[in-house]
Length: 116
Image 1 (cartoon, rainbow, N blue to C red):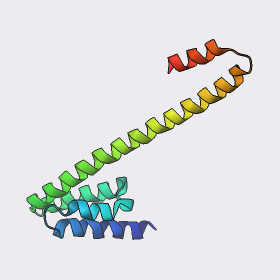
Image 2 (cartoon, rainbow, N blue to C red; image 1 turned 135 degrees about the horizontal axis):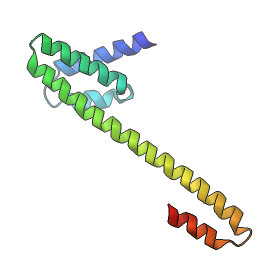
Image 3 (cartoon, rainbow, N blue to C red; image 1 turned 30 degrees about the horizontal axis):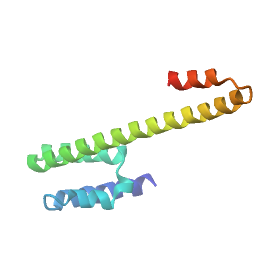
Image 4 (cartoon, rainbow, N blue to C red; image 1 turned 90 degrees about the horizontal axis):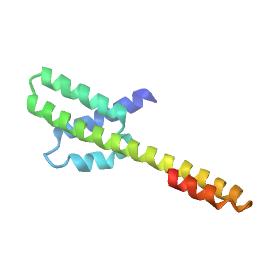
């Protein structure tokens, strides 16, 4: 699987290198299921290789794409973490409400909500 994944990354990078300016978004969107940390790492390796080959303009283009993707991926991860924390808070809140509502301990429920 790893070899197939690496080959898929290489194919996307070839498309990015050969496409006209402005077509990068279409290529990345069509392959969004493959855009991950591994792809970004390979993209950076390709950019470094191009820079060594003195294809500086193309190297900069790939570095720029990698930077945007890295920021986007990080934001996505942070969003997922935020959603996960919200989910667990709500789960805890509902359990707390259920258990304390039986005893009519509404102050405890209000305190939990105020703390978060």
